[in-house]
Length: 84
Image 1 (cartoon, rainbow, N blue to C red):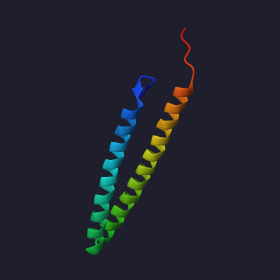
Image 2 (tube, rainbow, N blue to C red):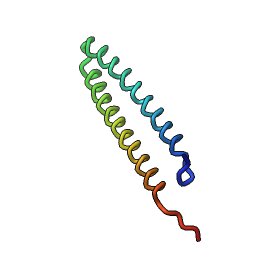
Image 3 (cartoon, one colour):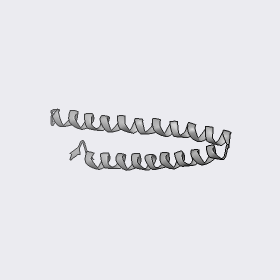
Image 4 (cartoon, rainbow, N blue to C red):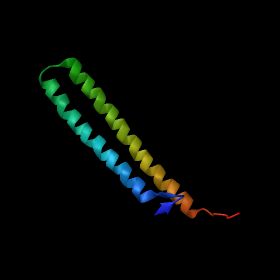
């Protein structure tokens, strides 16, 4: 549906695609963490763990963004448009 000149379904789909890329990056980072940890690369494994935490935070931000898009869409849809 187009809301305020924006196709909200397309916007939501785009946000979901970005989130999927981040989720994949998080899985790859997790694998790299285990490789570094198994090799006893302490600094590298610690940094990879930090990156995993940051990627988790980014994904939670995208969850919030999806909620905001839904709210903005609902608020605009229920509002009144006055033509001047």
